Image (cartoon, rainbow, N blue to C red; front, side, top):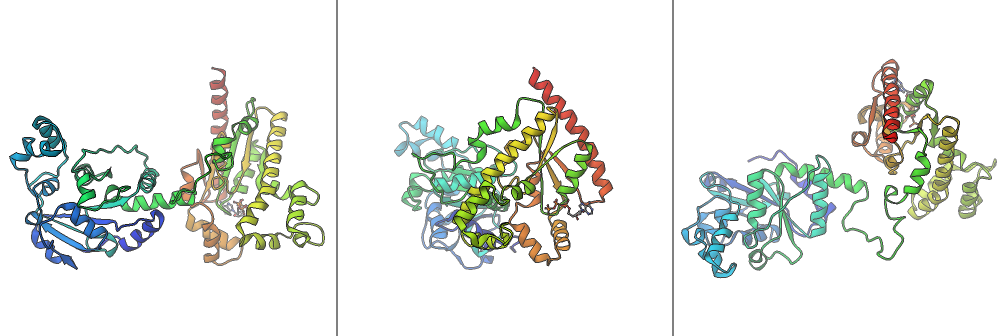
Length: 475
Ligand code: ATP
């Protein structure tokens, strides 16, 4: 019963990201009761119990607990996990009609609607806090409030999006999570039932998600990715009465700006991005030779803080002359030291620079398009995806080299250690994640000739795309 996954590391990270109040539960069905003896720290129920009682002893008391059919108080719980068939008193509807439904007929319908693991295969159940790496579980149960479960759903959808459908039979809804998860091999969420609240101590706000164990890494990867994009728990409120334009991602609120940028002519705006030293300038220059003018954010960001420019003046007024060199140019090192440890000052600095960059960016694009309404304009922005500007372009090009090689290239180019290069790159979205945003990818791993060949092909594609865009607009 060895462990393949480092559950402790995974669970600890998940607990932090979701701020869980109880332990994720490792849940396993055993084909042979004798296997129970091999589980470390195993306790058998001190008396007959319900399954939800056992669950709470695991997730809140941090017990490891194993049970076979004889340990359950009624046939209902073990019938859900395939340890027994139900007696007739249940299947004919009598049991449900005592409390939960009006007639025996409805009770029969109710019982038949419950999902159950088929009987015959399993003989025992074992549960333990997953963080203790007790055994390789079949599924994992996570109890959390609706906001946390929402985030977990978002995380699971991050790759291979799928809408989540969940069910709730009412009483005995552990079948909706546990049995459905076993039967479908997919995550299953439900609302813990009355019994689980009374006997299993599920809190008023608790929901439960059962995940096949293999989904846990996917869930964590999704949580990590969303965290990097600012999606976190607890969720910070934006202010119901406030102006949300600053809290929304730009793509939600700046449609008028977008129209100005995309224009009414035939221009095609190509956003070009990639990691530091991936070859963005190299590729941009190749495309330029073929006919695509460049707007370069690095150049613009230097232009707007030249002495006498509006942003320069605002920076000097706010930070004082201490941030100037003798020749009146900004002392970038000093400025970055000041804002490095002070997020508010960093925001202030950005509030001076970013609007000016945007004005100059739109001006340059419009100037190029005025001279050539059919221009294919490339806009080079190193952190395009990190700052959520992807919505501003018709198409997005990623200059790609794998993260490992990117680190090596940066270390060599800037004569720094590989660890330093890795730290610098860790401030950017991993290159593999950027791939998902790109319409086109130029792989710059090989020789310059190989890159040139791809760029030439890309240029033909871009021209064709532009023609299709024009044709679609005329329809
Ligand atoms: P930065 O992020 O610093 O602006 P960049 O992404 O624009 O960098 P480049 O300046 O184009 O990257 O390239 C970085 C270095 O790697 C340059 O010295 C360039 O000549 C070299 N280079 C680019 N592509 C290749 C390649 N395919 N083979 C070998 N060297 C390359």
